[in-house]
Image (cartoon, rainbow, N blue to C red; front, side, top):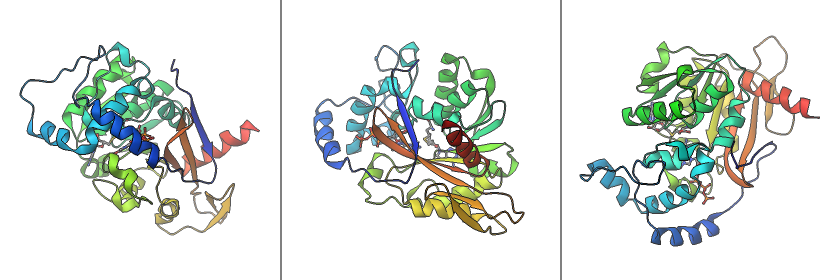
Length: 302
Ligand code: MGP
Ligand code: SAH
């Protein structure tokens, strides 16, 4: 359905620097500034004449113009059905997981399982988990985004498999149950690229360790979508947060970790680079049963 190809490779991570290209494209895109508003399928902007203070603030951010132009160009790779009326907001434009990547991430979850999408945004990941045949609880703090996500889910015909919850993941976490948890938290906006190495402390609204710990209380089977410049050694450390502490041995490439078979539930870390049209978009880290699933699927490839 998408004319976008996604290549997800489980391999040691190499950091690709696009900053020069990005700088050049940013200058060009600034000139073609598109306002960041809810946008309809026809490309007409559905912005109300009296812009909210929050919208004004967003528009004021220098990066936003470039982001809007850039992501408008990428709209069909973000949502292949964009032209059927998918709706976005400012943050949605730069945060939605490109559809082919979201589908590849969802393919790691067993069909019929219950997935918690803790930071659901405008629905990019929830929709693909539901399309995979999973049941989804989609938590999102911004009520407007929940409306957009529910609308987008209807376009994909998967709304009956997603339960949308408006709320703060950290407050809701103790009462949530799921077979696996998907984490795609805010990275701090498009300026995440300016960090030479992105530290997990830079994730929002809490640092990556706290986010991971909250998820771990729900399930050890976790998928995390992270910036391509993330400090991979920190990602590896996340799997050591288990209590009681686990012994690990490294298996498969240098990023896969499993327990040493002493009777402690396996915690496995796999990470893969997620590409769209040969462009590295982010790093997907798989933990626990999700990582085992990745290993199984990778082995079946050979
Ligand atoms: P990007 O790096 O801003 O775009 O985002 P691109 O086109 O790769 O940039 P360039 O440097 O090649 O020009 C890439 C992808 O990362 C987006 O499509 C989103 O899926 C994801 N992403 C980006 N941001 C800023 C966020 C964020 O704040 N939160 C989450 N969850 N994902 C983000
Ligand atoms: N994966 C999504 C994008 C997620 S962007 C997609 O493909 O569409 C991260 C989202 O986390 C933002 O929409 C933001 O509003 C939301 N968020 C931020 N803090 C949150 C919190 N405490 N609880 C739940 N959602 C939160």
